[in-house]
Length: 156
Image 1 (cartoon, rainbow, N blue to C red):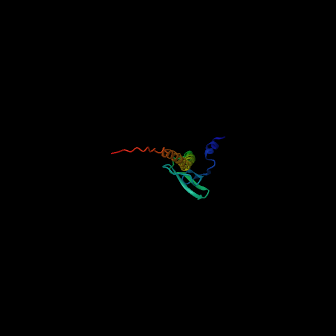
Image 2 (cartoon, rainbow, N blue to C red):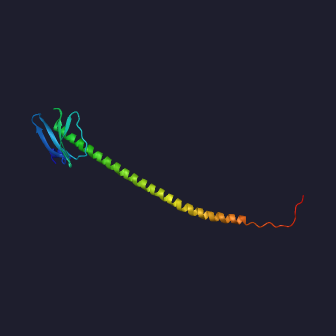
């Protein structure tokens, strides 16, 4: 790969044009980015939205002063690209963590609801069986031998 190609390679899918503003004496870049991407200008470089539609935004990136060279403009575009890639990756990681937490909470909720259902069913079945056992014990206690009357009386 030749030198200029290697310099342009990181922004190949985004660079629309590179023009020389002959009135100002500097280069300007036109770059296409997705609508959701963030960008802002700084003290050295301006970003201006030239056009916007449903597929993306067309930005004009140009210097604010004569000390900024074309290399700085390229580096600025690379910063926009890298920053937005990092944002997308972090959003994806966060979404995956939230999906995992959601699955975990759903599993925990299902286990809890099953435990409640089991408790509702088993408790009453056990209570009925416990009642029958208690009832049998109570009846056997109440079936004491009758007292034998011997005819003796206690006197005063």
